[in-house]
Image 1 (tube, rainbow, N blue to C red):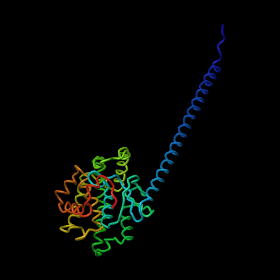
Image 2 (image 1 turned 90 degrees about the vertical axis):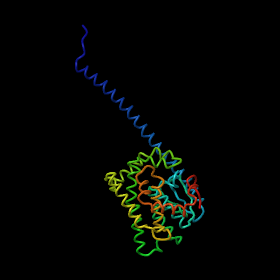
Image 3 (image 1 turned 120 degrees about the vertical axis):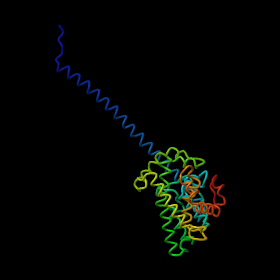
Image 4 (image 1 turned 135 degrees about the vertical axis):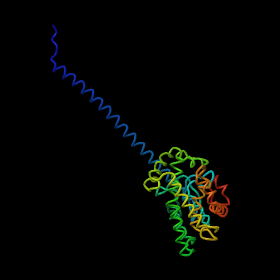
Length: 308
């Protein structure tokens, strides 16, 4: 009769086979992990190199811009208004008011602070539309606010902050949360692929910021009421005047125009589009006056960049 191996020998053999199998799997898994890490490193290095070369080539192109011409880096042009960003429209309107020559660049819309617009001016990069306006105003002697009375200057600053730090957030609730960014895409003739693919991430970031800022914690009805009160305040201050501070426009008019123009042309289907027409006709008149005075080439600016 054949003698069977002892149980401890059998168990030992089974454990040995299992261990060799595990070791082999771990080695294979380890090699796979190393290959994945290597692929990620190589891909990141290639992307970084591509971005470096692209930025260098763009910078060389920007260096060809004539001296004292402001190169405005902005989001792509709009189909219904020159830009879907109120801050870009604000800056462009000021440059037209001040008669400062500028060119547009759409290759790199987000600047050092991660916002649009930003400018390259005589080799220097400057971010934030308000900072840019104040800097250029001092340099070119085109600080229109300084010519106002002290009371008007205080009112202009208050209106500017209300629009850019309160009304702006209320409008973002509709544009990015309620409308889910559809109007932004619809308002652009040629939507870059990066915007189409990146819109969900961009919206997520905006909605996160809305909740941190506080506006995103309110109901749509509460936000709508806040927006209406802001518009009512601007309407009341404007009254029958052609511009906010009197007969001539100043920086605050450029700011308010940048936002109201969005409601007029780039918020199709929103309650604010109707509100502007029905409840605040003097604001509609203001928008049309600013457009007629500073954007006589409005329709042409919807199609291609233009140098002034």
